[in-house]
Length: 119
Image (cartoon, rainbow, N blue to C red; front, side, top):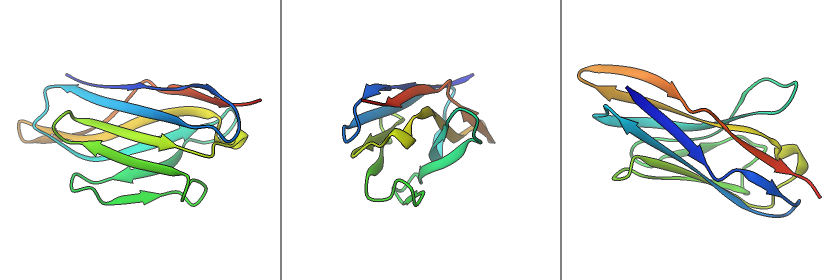
């Protein structure tokens, strides 16, 4: 069993910052590419940022220059530093990861953490 647990969401004013964390635990040999997704009410889930096991990153155009994805491979933890937050960043943020164990590779999702940007 593998679990992805997100934390760090909350209510923040426009222009503010939040830092999300996602920790993988359980039967893990290697955590490969990790992603942050978000889903706003009435909208489809969208990819926000990705980071490979070697630290290569990619961002959605909407967050480029404002969000920074990082990871600590020793702790099996991924982070999303979100700065200059806008109301349109309001969404449930989900962690997603490809994790290998005992010769198999599976994709896992976290339960999500709510981020609300409002004055």
